[in-house]
Length: 165
Image (cartoon, rainbow, N blue to C red):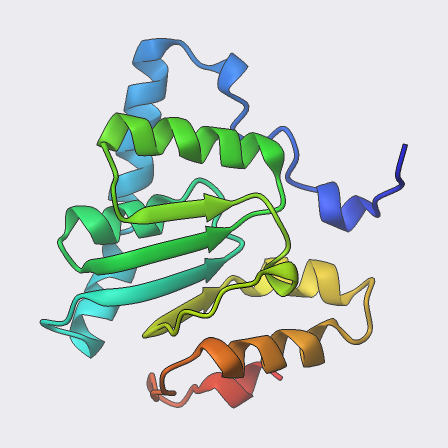
């Protein structure tokens, strides 16, 4: 059995489908979608009328990508999630919503073979820091991969892409 550092497996078991009944699962889906309202408002302010190509690193359940699709703001959404249980959950979530625009991959973003460009790349800092703690070159590799996929950088208040590296 291959050893994986605990930081790579920290979210394994989260949103395990065996913990839900059909009713609690649907309620949980609805709660997940409603929890994205602030993020949706923020993105709408930056891109008021554009359908977006969005990449999310550490996408978890895919809730933000699915909500963007529901809001008709999404051209295509791709998520990368290391946790197998969360990817299984996102697949069930996708089926429930009849999603056609979101793809979630159970792999490390750095190993992807995508050639697509994105309007927005979302990387949760907790996820990035978990991996960076065990791979001293991760942030450099992550930044290099981002620069290939990113269409343009925008300023969000005083923060821009370079604030994270």
